[in-house]
Image (tube, rainbow, N blue to C red):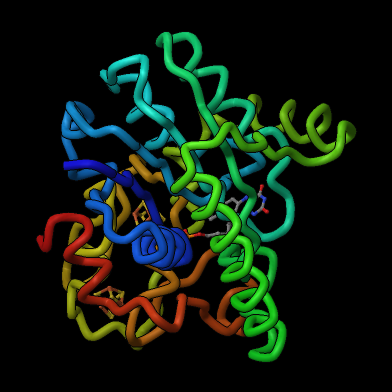
Length: 262
Ligand SMILES: Cc1cc2nc3c(=O)[nH]c(=O)nc-3n(C[C@H](O)[C@H](O)[C@H](O)COP(=O)(O)O)c2cc1C
Ligand code: SF4
Ligand code: SF4
């Protein structure tokens, strides 16, 4: 096993990025961070981390995963921070976490794809999405060239003001993540298919009286609201009017298989 890529994803952008990269690298083993053993990369020569940016930093499950990692110091490490245009300090945060474990992040790339943060608005127009997919493909090409050559690449970051202001917000909100599910609710179109239960990477949803109920162990990935086939799941007051977003080349079975096919 030469290259292992650990990923985390809510709407498929990071899974798509990880797959594209694996293809350009001539193959890599893709493992979902929530299902993989953090020791699974053991003898790999190259290890990658591909994940969305959440609230201008690393998603909580990524932080938890990195804390459990055990790798040889000489392993070539890279990361893709998949985001909607504000990577802020996310890759530096990862670089620092790895350094505390005696590991070096050789390269960290900022990959911009459509936003899945539906509380702030629905999916972007198809044309805008296509522009981002095309730009991301080119960026992934650059990343793959750097990784293939085992070069020390950039660790990309947003502007200073973003790193100061948004990192403060990240730190303040980090401990609230689990409870953000209090604003989810389900409308009458639900047909009790249980896809939300199966797709949730945190096992945070259970069915109660034929409707989903959230257990306050949420990771804010937004998979449940974005993938519900009936669009029955809502967050706050505005989402009934918003269009859902999922990466068009990632399927529901891909997502469910990623979290263990429950
Ligand atoms: C809780 C949450 C917070 C987010 N925060 C940011 C952010 O700080 N900066 C940004 O550019 N995108 C942010 N986004 C958007 C995602 O990073 C972006 O849509 C990403 O491509 C989603 O990847 P995924 O489909 O693999 O989950 C956020 C999304 C979520 C769900
Ligand atoms: S995925 Fe949607 S329709 Fe299916 S049980 Fe969940 S809320 Fe109901
Ligand atoms: S409850 Fe929804 S948003 Fe929270 S972790 Fe599960 S799928 Fe993601």
